[in-house]
Image (cartoon, one colour):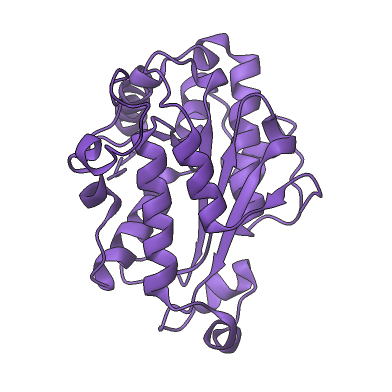
Length: 266
């Protein structure tokens, strides 16, 4: 990881989010604060679980050099599939020995995401439905409130924030604010190539800060891909936060008609 990425404590990131003014719904995507999110898992099915996760807060003024990162290694209490282990490099023994208990890690992750959403700060993830689904499934597995549960009545839940009264929420528990660079890339590029994160990063000239399939590295690379998209395609960069969801949904519907795309950001 690059030296300019600050490793933060959960309490410091929560304090930073609480100190933010809620973003205006008409903030252009290029000027928005972002909360990058990525996971590594035991596999790809609904019965699999998260083994590592990262959240990275990026401010438009500081950009990449001001990233504040949080990361977790989690004991999933289930074995890694051989394919997943080959990709993410974890072992079952390592996760049992070094991983946090899932309840503590997952509760903190969901609380930070919900707080960011209450400030109209998008959650950014590459192929977001996968990471969001894995988090939701794990929260339910351990009998914890999902992000959607936490966003129900968000203005009441976060009414101790003194900046929210005059700025409307973009999100609701049914429609969280999620930015997916994979969907945006499909909207602007018709190239006939693979679109894994590493492929898309290479296409847009993004250099990762380490090896892909590390949750922090991948979250930062996904935000860098979005930054490139915003620079190269002014229509993407000028999208108001309030319109991102509809724009992505329209893109997904068009893509589904061609190949199949399912959106599950809740």
